[in-house]
Image 1 (cartoon, helix red, strand yellow):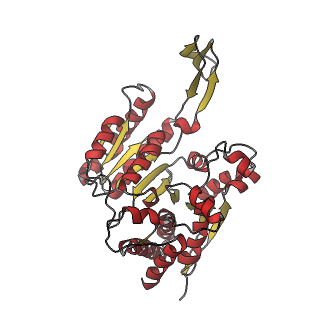
Image 2 (cartoon, rainbow, N blue to C red; image 1 turned 45 degrees about the horizontal axis):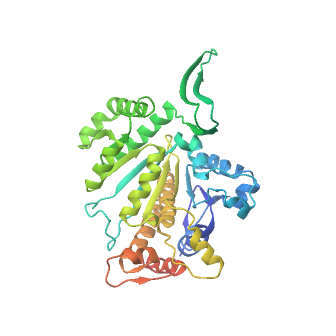
Image 3 (cartoon, one colour; image 1 turned 60 degrees about the horizontal axis):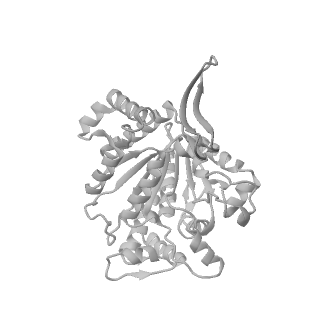
Length: 402
């Protein structure tokens, strides 16, 4: 059979630990037999990031800007324990944070629903998409430890050198800590437009939630920009489709989400989105059943799995033990990137392949063949737990049939 041809390469960002092993198997078993795969490859494994002083991460993001579509494997964000393990020069920042800052995009995360796996919240019959602002807040923070007797101030110097000062706290009686956050109006506006456009694409309501009653300047700025852009650019389009945008407080949003049926986009600031996407994915069944795509305001797409590098399974793998690691989100990262590449390049056979890859993956699980995490929560009567590689081979059989 002639392989499906690609006109333009994908940017391929390799990663760490067990997901790096799955990455190689997915390509070998599910993609390379059918697609003449063209990628511009970047090794974002922690060892290579350390060797290049993390320049490889910046290069991969710049390449994504050039080619328009990237697919990324999960990567380690090192903590203190990783320093001696990998002999690191420094505690390198999150590659996702770096890439998101360069692309200035919004992360959309949506659960993959399959028969036999009932959400922990039974009313959730439709997917909830979490839209996470991917710039600023705690991920671009400045923080300090403060000694007793110190006074902390917020100081802003304008372009003429004039200073505005506001006291944060006087630490006259105790040591303490301070943290400085920032965001940019143009990034917030890009976030708002990305979310509202996604609502039009999916024909779904968009919720935005923050805590403007407490954060009367910072969070309120997000609320105002969202409302202004909606009123001026999207209100008529939304009303024509019978969908709505509304703002609510983050604590009210959580209560509404738990009582809802799903089927909407929940827009969150960076940290809120980080936390809530894990909560939503777990409540649907598994973090490994969550798609994730970073969309920039100028139409750049980076697909990845929503989960981490599965460190515990990797250590088992290194000992020669078999693992039963769920690769679904990583498969869907590849299918999403291949489909988007096909759409942008007008190569429908590549889009069709991506559809069939996803169909074969879901079919495998719904026919009772699954990894250990899904086996524990699946309500199917006839089910079989398989190891990581066998799961991919089972998908491969169904993909070949399709």
